Length: 161
Image (cartoon, rainbow, N blue to C red):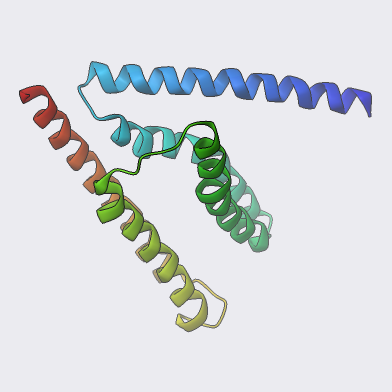
């Protein structure tokens, strides 16, 4: 029991140091390539922090445990939206940019709506088919492409000022 607690504490310390490295690295990438920090946050940090979830998804798929995939995806969204935003807001009030309210939050809402529609009215009740999965993946890719273009354009505007 003591061994597991020590390993967990070491894991938390490494997690904190890793988070510092990610934040500093992302900021350096944004500065080096003249990209907005929100672009780096959404694309690089967002995808980077989702890699463990993708590995859990692949492993769960291969072992025939789809409930873990759904729980992981929904739990992650809830934690990111409510827990992370809540803790961050307590530490320092967050100002929400107009672009987030106009674009990024509606995209998130539509993705949740698509998931609800596919689960309830799609290929079969409580089933997400391969075709619906492809739609979700295309939606994610289009969002990333849009975000990258938006970030580059914002960076160009900022360098002109």
